[in-house]
Length: 195
Image 1 (cartoon, rainbow, N blue to C red):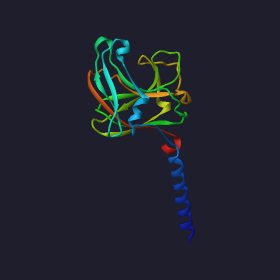
Image 2: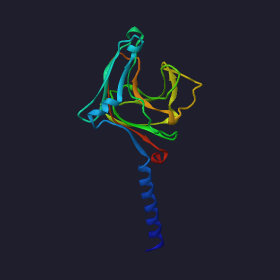
Image 3: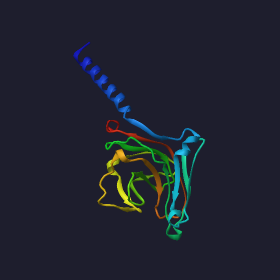
Image 4: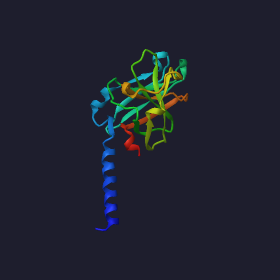
């Protein structure tokens, strides 16, 4: 074997090993491949503030979670959401949340929840959808910003990944009418995976 061939083989082995290690950086947070998957989620809509938006969810035969309903701006409302019930998610500060979704062209928000004394508090990042198309969206934790009642909280700092115990999808784009977002899975991906 020539020196050049040896170098090429070493390169292939290094790249192959790096690929294997990177694959281990992925962590499935939520999949919707069993009917029981619905038990981990709950809908929370603007009815908690007097609004009349109707947001629901279901786990489908296609092994997705479908978040759907009608957004209403009546009675000072304007949001519909679905979120996971609290549990340890095991995130680290270098993680990105990656979601595979099929939307309706509307802009949704992915919310991260931490235990806090603040009311209506979450960390948010935007998910842009393409009507009828499956897309994978990667959202680094460092890009999430703190909100309370939908307004930015400037003094809250970055999300502490280790404290995140729930996440969810929110629609609050001030456009009344029907909506539908299908979610195939939600993963946490470490830095090695993004290289």
